[in-house]
Image (cartoon, rainbow, N blue to C red):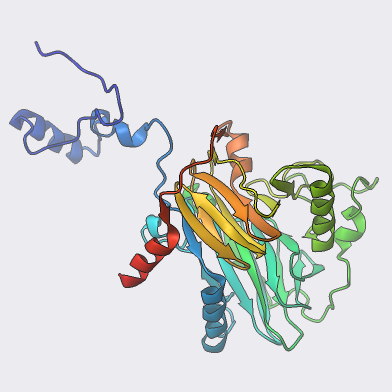
Length: 380
């Protein structure tokens, strides 16, 4: 009787092989016919010792993103059907899907002069982080939210939203959505508003209604019942974020300080599936090398510097965007005062008790540059 062995390492799985005994090959055929899979041939894939994401670290450069978005503005009209003029970040490791990571959608949206994007709603939640332009406003469930660079605007799950640009200059912003996650759960619903717009003629005030009620830090209004599934505050202003980060740098010696955008009524994340944060980097100091269960997408709001992800150094400047897969080791170093906006799936991992963070005792080694991978990708 042969000895039964169980895998001691990930490599000690027993994949199918043409050299298997005929009886075993016949057995595998029977399993296929009955839509069954033998666990012992795939244990290493299903139960690795650490996450092995298909997504890869990747960087998209703003110079190219902006040029292509502007070209889309010339070629592609906004109307029912297309709905939005959006270029989604497509991670090279995800087989051509329009996803930045396995759980996150990242994109650049372009709204040209005197354009409006029709009203719709969907179960995936969305955030807008503004990069360029002034005077555009987003209507979220009837509440007009002005948009300016550095602002974060929420369009939570199943809220009606439309975008309006009454000016002569285009606006570009970063879209972050949980589309891949909601799609994996088979929970995507979408609906067009009965008319093109909920309210196309309503001008955007300097402060949305949500800001008038919930925009004062540390003050919770009585007599108003906030929504329980997301923040009642729809717009987070850059001036507040900037001031808070400056204060943190003055009181701490850390190489990087971080603020998280939260629900002012509960202190929880602004959206239940995505964590939005802004990180300010002190120039010339490298942050600790860390890895986190869960993925993120970073947008360089200002400054220049580099990030090392799994040993590959990526140099970035304002507007660049990069993906950090789950359990990838990452650290940052700025060449000048720099701000990184990030969106991650951290709330989901924490809700499911799957969150894990590890800080390396020393900085990871740099073994490659992203520029080389970028050049090879272009050559293909």
